[in-house]
Image (tube, rainbow, N blue to C red; front, side, top):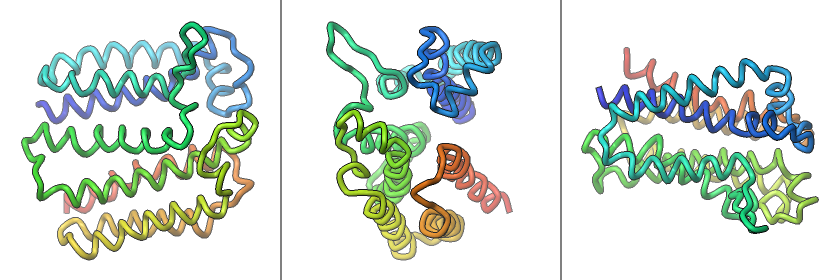
Length: 246
């Protein structure tokens, strides 16, 4: 039951995080972020966003009661980090938004997702041990490669804010090369250290490399990142689920 409860909690927590920026824009009537497709959609569907947000909060409370209490000590800090990443906060003029941390925001996103989708599930099943360290590294490379790409979407905004990110400092082509390089390293680790997981992981890694190297262009709109890059994690889950169900 704990596994399904954890999945339910993570699913609705993700909905909360993804919609927090929209809720913030609705409540504060912040037009400065209205150039974002996601925010535009939220502002046009205020009632639906509020319903989704309320259902997600109630669902998270329900599933949190079914998760071992010790896990809340890990989940609560990660939830706070996720919210601080989604919405800018300031106290007495001190900016607490994780997005404003030079270079580190990409790493923080990757590590947060790694803890949520890999390390905590292993711990939940009492499977967290040294033999999984290479697998954890393999997953980290995938998540970091995607996180690097999402900084490209914010390049113009980060540049105008004088925020140091990989795309701002090194440019589009180098950033794209870093992402492909991380995925290539993941592929080498797969072929070297794993057997049972090789096929589904190899498929999603190759698909990611093809998408990034051949289809991604500098002038791609936000919808490309939201619809294709962001969905790679979902495709990864579907491919793995189908493979292990056969």
